[in-house]
Length: 317
Ligand code: CP
Ligand code: NVA
Image 1 (spheres, protein in one colour):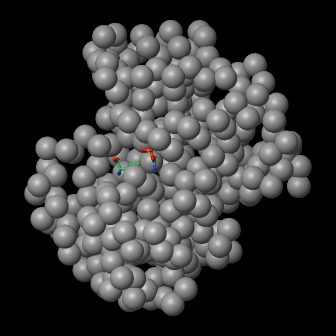
Image 2 (cartoon, rainbow, N blue to C red):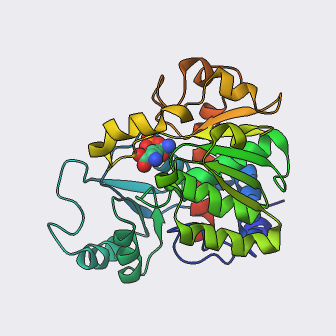
């Protein structure tokens, strides 16, 4: 399939703020486009030629920054990195609305990593150029798209795929739920009682699940979630922005550590997943993270291709 036939029917919303903008068909097409970009990068070597992107990061990043910068340059575009990790947060020096109205005069797209999802929404509401969520307190859609692409590469179609997520009901968990629902996956999410994913995200996923026959089960017992799973996913117990809660979280999440005993409950060919950065000896043991079952680095590699698919869809050609 050519790039044109892959992208043509994909009328995505102008922005990518949550991943819930996408219909089940659109998520599948993004996965197909990701595969095409990975297999034939030369076809997309100039589709962003003459396009400029502002990358605004309020929090640190290794994977997201590098994959966006390299990905955009590999498509002929260019990036400007606005480092807000030390400087004032967006909205402090200058109102978010003014940042949006200025940036749209110079660049073709905004890629932002923020503390507060509402800042992304404000950027999107005030800029007539696409805004892409590079992680917020609520969502990490670029991550989840790469994760499902990685699973599809290894296991084939994801309808009925048994994915266990163990740990904090955080941004990564939310995005896995929203996209997993669109792909018809069977998700078991095990969190401590006070760290469950947000009710409105579960409600959106369950609405979509009626169409895709996805399943979303919320549990408090990690062993029950992992039993028979084809993939076991975890993330840090303390996400960026929640550092003040680290000591409490270390205590509450201790029974949720993914270790050899936990992985032994999963299916014999089950893989281990982590968005990274990982904390060996906390949410996952070094033994599991560094084992042959771990596909964390494949997830990282694929961030590049799935983000290129998002950019190609929103701005390519
Ligand atoms: N997984 C991920 O988004 O990594 P970074 O925080 O390094 O970008
Ligand atoms: N949940 C983590 C993901 C980091 C990529 C965080 O928000 O810090």
